[in-house]
Image 1 (cartoon, rainbow, N blue to C red):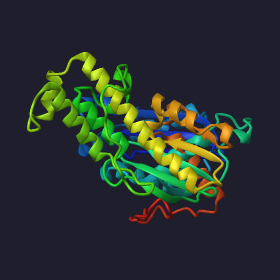
Image 2 (image 1 turned 45 degrees about the vertical axis):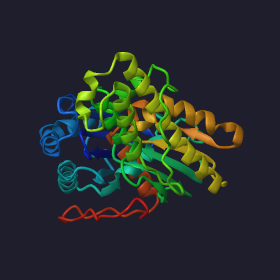
Image 3 (image 1 turned 120 degrees about the horizontal axis):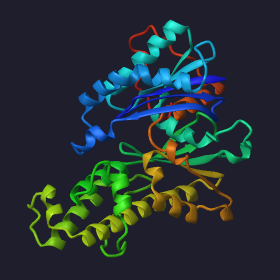
Length: 355
């Protein structure tokens, strides 16, 4: 089964052709990072217009790279939520139009489900399915907009057992990077700068009951630690602190923050494992899953030695892309999910990932 996956939830315009949820025939991504690096973050209206400019060339290239025509495509999957409203509108309207024009079934795919299913993309149908995650599993979804722990007893079955009460961990990376004067996006910038002493600055672990997270306090703790380090009052503007920091201080703060953020995630996952002893796999998904420190610590803590297998998406699939949408769409079809009506204006109901 060949599925065209379309993704426009934020600042990447992406389309891909995926076979049977595992093999990528094409994967085209046009990023707007260069545009928003100048502003230090995404501007929703600009993002939507940028999607509009490249949407048609992107899906046409995806078909061309896959060496297939519309006759070969069995279904269209598109991200419908969550994300920036204007960006999602461009992708969903494009998918609806294509479904009508080419008489293809259309599936509305949840963005976080797509990130999780990036872990099932093995690159080849000949790959042993034992290389894919086993159920039941825990999925740690970490990105710029979300931080959640999901329990999955089977395909397309999701239960949110932990979530952030304020900032997402990726958002925290972005804001700390701005405090340190590092460029957007903050995740790669922090990781690159984190060559200093990770034990130089003590940063607190927020005390949140259960499996929930909180990262707003960590962000503030970094701000106060930087202000104290350079000898300025708490009223000193955060955007001016970079002028007072030495390169070594930036490296030390980046390393200390990264270590703390990763340990907070790992601590909650350890607790989740204790509460769900039946789990056979741990899956990490989302943009922050590309962080090398996080990959190393998760692999160390949740190893094959304790009977739990650990899975990460390929680095090229950790960010937003159409291939993960195609994979998630395939497993929705296999689970009996029905296509949506592309003629209806409001075909994308506001539902949680639990539905």
